[in-house]
Amino acid sequence: MKSFDYFAPQSLDDATSLLHRYGKKSTLLAGGTDLLLRMERRLIEPGVIIDLKKIRAIKGIKVARNGLRIGAATLMDEIASSPLLRGRYGMVAQAAAAVGSIQTRNRATLGGNLCNASPAADTAPPLIALSATARFASSRRERELPLDEFFSGPGKTRLQSNELLKEIFVPFVAERSGGSFQRCTRTAMDIALVNCAVFISLAAEENTITNVRIALGAVAPTPVRARGAEDFLCGKTPNPTAINEAADLAVAGATPIDDVRSTASYRREMVRVLVRRAINGALEQARE
Ligand SMILES: Cc1cc2nc3c(=O)[nH]c(=O)nc-3n(C[C@H](O)[C@H](O)[C@H](O)COP(=O)(O)OP(=O)(O)OC[C@H]3O[C@@H](n4cnc5c(N)ncnc54)[C@H](O)[C@@H]3O)c2cc1C
Image (cartoon, rainbow, N blue to C red; front, side, top):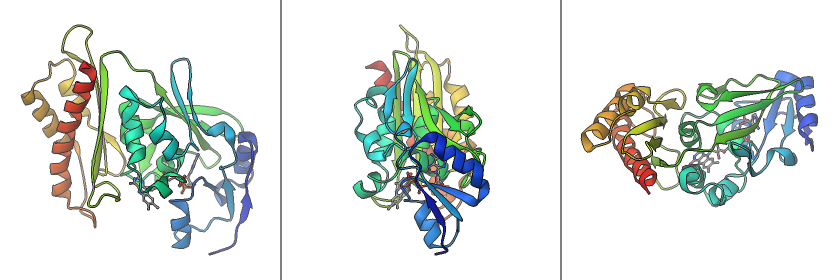
């Protein structure tokens, strides 16, 4: 491994100053569960490593005025077991609990999962379905972007070289809402062949869908929304025929590839199955 300079700043200001100073020469390190593998394989040879682990300001889950703030350096294990991520937000905890093994979850962070930008990242679909936004920080300013606009390609995000992901904001959701996260893998501890999350809100006293967001992973170069299926379902009274049609529309919008984990045609079939299950799961929770 090529030698590098190592910094472990204790504050966000120090981290963003280092990013400003070293820019593209530097790489951020959180839990290292993705980064160290890439360094070991020499896919990346950073000159400077900026370790985020000592920055308390970007750790933990907090209740804010309009929603929940999850620091980028929050561990998967904390997310999986947080009492704040229950009920309608429970699909985020469920996705974090699906990441690797307990050892992995004790190192891996939410920010690392999102910034690594794997199309199969498990935490992306539930957060996108919940309309989460990403907050970035640089030494000059902070800015926000809806999470469904954060990814720009496999391994690529819209972060600038002088920015880091500070936190994810999940807005509070309406009464009579529900969510469901689904995934399928080859073995129990494997990256998803397909993952998916659905969030649905129902009208106050009827069964009409007033808001629906469907997010899919591992079926396109980035996590994506199934907008055709969302548009079709919104305003409808859900029934098995409509749910099947929405699942078919989600398949039509997916562009999976063949790879070592699955064929594209199997992935398409699993989109149909998982979207159907997730819609039913979200509806069940919304009606509780
Ligand atoms: C055995 C094993 C099993 C796994 N199983 C799964 C699985 O089932 N599902 C799944 O989704 N993933 C899985 N992963 C992948 C991995 O654990 C996750 O992607 C993890 O969340 C990455 O977080 P990290 O803190 O380790 O990131 P790191 O490896 O430290 O960083 C990953 C990337 O993100 C960047 N980065 C980190 N934090 C920030 C930040 N705050 N701002 C900007 N950039 C940042 C880094 O520079 C790097 O490019 C698995 C990994 C292993 C080793």
